[in-house]
Image (cartoon, rainbow, N blue to C red; front, side):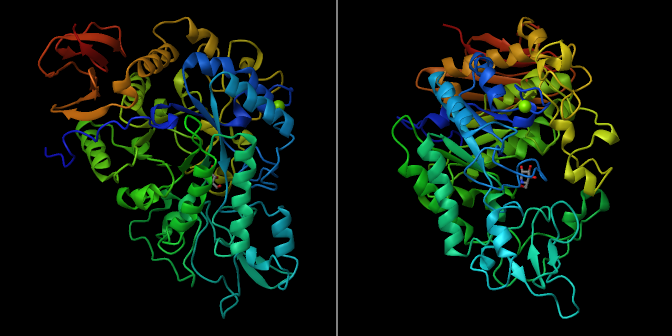
Length: 539
Ligand code: NOJ
Ligand code: MG
């Protein structure tokens, strides 16, 4: 196999910002911890679990949207960008959470949803009030086609046309997601100014960064041409994939907007307190790389989702990692993700044994990893009975397996009532195995997934090679994926067996000592089935 990456990745930058060596942890706030007995997680619930996160060993949390919202898309439909939804708490609760996190050395990232607001946002209420309203142009209004139909063939990501007819003013408005989520018009300078002020509002309060929702969606082609049909479309993919989103996403003008956001983040940064921007972008590798911006003028971390969907095969992964490293622009820092609130969980995709190997991979690759809450327990997708379905994605295109409720089940803390998540019935059912798979049960079990994560995170902290070191693939065969991380005289080798049969591995010359294994097996020159190991030179 030929791998097109540089042999060794670039040198370690001195005085790197905190987020380069950090591990991020995503909290879906409805599902983490309820504090007030309404069955919905909230900010005081998160505050009560900060010590768990410190003990786990993560550096920062990203909280999915907590702003006032009608919850048509569970907070990704924002009604007020500078407030807190009462279900989650108050601004005072948020300030207290931020202070408590900072006191523990934890950073907090919020979720910025700039592409669309709620249809209940005052801006949209004004915009739809009349064609001459000063906010009319804040959203994307178009006349009907000559036959009275939709302006073009664009499809909502949740299925159905992306255009909604407004009877009162006789025009359609565009919504990339639900009709309750009208897209903002980022070509309008007043929209830009108002939304950039939102970033300043939260940065001034002390927020450490943002994950930016659907960054690549923000600008559409000015003429709204039809999207090309997708020749590979199949009904099982969901309706959105009927067309290729050539004109509705990833337009060149988006990069200037990302640049504006970056300048604001930089303005609020001081050494050790850098503010970080992470862009949600689902695009092929080379287009993804543009979001780093020319000369580091874009977002710091365009999310790299490749591991979520990757074929779980050592050679495929080796090539994918090499290609990604090779594609990074100068100064671009890598990042890796195994799951989030929209995608199937790692343990469901790979099975329990390989989920442990995947965790070792995620936390030892070069770059900033993001853990999804509950993956550290090995949670699988929960089974949601039809009468408990909440996700609009599932309700609009049922039965295709596109629904996201299964990955949003409540965090199981202990074997008590409602798994310690709430005193009331949770908004979504718990996973079936919560009585045995929960934080309390796993904490004291050295063989648990939680203990594996704590050990991995502790090793990352202790070894600069893992935190920021260079990366080099080690020649390997079959099911083995192996690589080396180096920072100064700190040297680590990782060897992973992605298969269920023993496999020999050839290590770089020298004697190697086992630091951590995903299985109880000793380390020899043959990896046991599903065994991943972290090694250090024998001194
Ligand atoms: C991406 C978010 O991750 C997803 O949960 C949401 O439904 C859409 N953006 C729309 O905001
Ligand atoms: Mg609550």
